[in-house]
Length: 362
Ligand code: COI
Image (cartoon, rainbow, N blue to C red; front, side):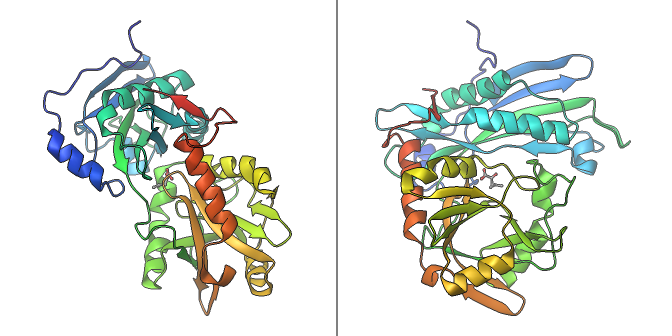
């Protein structure tokens, strides 16, 4: 059967020695594979021109809507090499469904789930040699995205849209490893409000997080923590690129409920795994005052962040205007490290895939 995204192989692949050097120390988001998947959409034709072809720049008219009004969405997922040599994706159906919800929020056309899956799978097959070897914590990070390519300066949903997937071999997102990071609690910036785009994975959310990220760096922190001030209570939202989880001395795994935050794949997976660690999963609003008091009196024993790129990253300290405190004595917590290890074991095929989360591609 003809693949949904037929492959036109590049005639100028990255030389093998260069690829091997990249795979030995990939970093995050710095190197790209030989191919990309693309599809085009117009109101007249719907989705068409699906293909996997050589990685190449786009040619865009200077008035393309995305450049002016940020009509854009994206996803992030990873392909993992197992010791049997095969390559698996982790819960790509979850990404496909979230991509469809983001598209609806940004008035972009919905890409059918089977196209999302076929584009990712066929790109991974074309660039299989770029999937890092089993054994470490490296993977092939896949970045599906969609943008308004129509040349038009009026503000309305674009009638021409491009969908694409690129791939990038990835090591740890935070090069410091799992020693733990410090979050800057921004009192100046918020990320989202009710009715806004907080739950969508759109570039605009990340663009607006950058000033807060700079503020965090200026205060010696690794990332920012956004609070939701719409209710005036300072509920925890998420960090710039990750969801947040707390472990309590009462054996609960608590994470802010959905609404204005990203419905994270890693967040959802951790909630599903909580019971295996004897933790009760709780999704509810958590005020920053509660977190601070809990860290002080020992009722909040661990805090960690969760995301596809960052996996599970311990939060060992929080800082803001006029305060600074540690969590769990400033060291990564046991549950944090155990859940992280177990999730990676599932992803790399070292633990049983009880929830059928893995999808074999190669
Ligand atoms: C991911 O974890 O996949 C993300 O999208 C975070 C990213 C913006 C690096």
